[in-house]
Image (cartoon, rainbow, N blue to C red; front, side, top):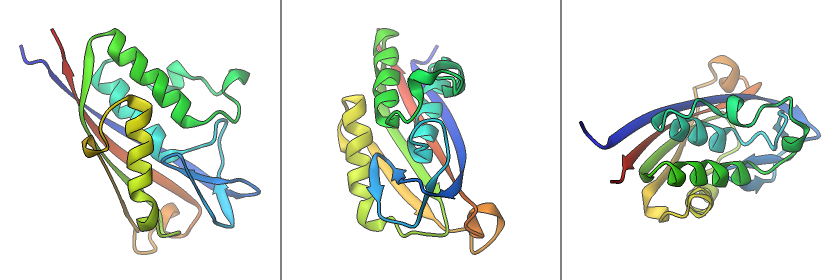
Length: 161
């Protein structure tokens, strides 16, 4: 049996006025932010779901339910650090993470490296193990019309013996 596990994560949040836009743990100046119980960091949420899926830990809704007031407004990087702790406790090491943000705007190119660094720091891994990219959807769908943002992530874990 192989000691490698792959997981895929997906998350989506609606954009709303009066909220900070936090992506990959970076506050990005913009007129709207993502709506959610926590800081609604759609990118980190997808990463967490990829990691928890690879380790067969369920999903972030199970681990950090939005009905729990303890998670109201919490930094998603803190939740990611907890996922990292759970992975280590079960003998998993992160091999790499590849994440993509789907958003028409704003441009995130100036922030991608900081996002990768933040994700890596929360997990105690090298930024070289984290790739962050973004794409528009050419004006199509809810991400294209600016109603919301989505993110996908893939994570590869190794079960250490």
